[in-house]
Length: 100
Image 1 (tube, helix red, strand yellow):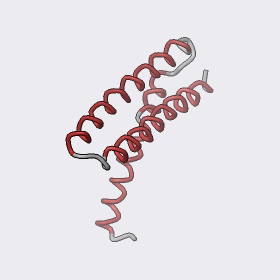
Image 2 (image 1 turned 60 degrees about the vertical axis):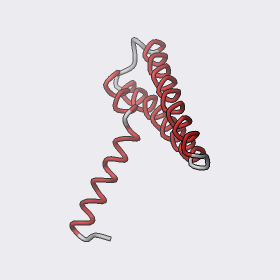
Image 3 (image 1 turned 90 degrees about the vertical axis):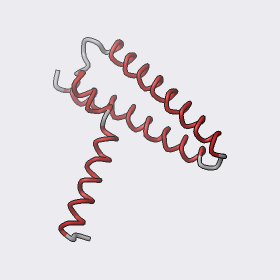
């Protein structure tokens, strides 16, 4: 079903965006602490985020098991990272082509 390609990507992108926002929240709050507390909080936040991230992926895959397109769901899960990579690549290209 072609519409499930879009739904799959959107469901993955929602998780990716949530993960990225949660990560920025953890890092922002951790920066105001001493070094040992910061390390502990970031490590805890990392593992908790990925446990939630994996649970979400399994729940979506189980609930929509006959409909979801797992490849596009996976691309959706990586959408925040892909956007970061593309932005970095574009910044490098702009630097070398002197585009402002």
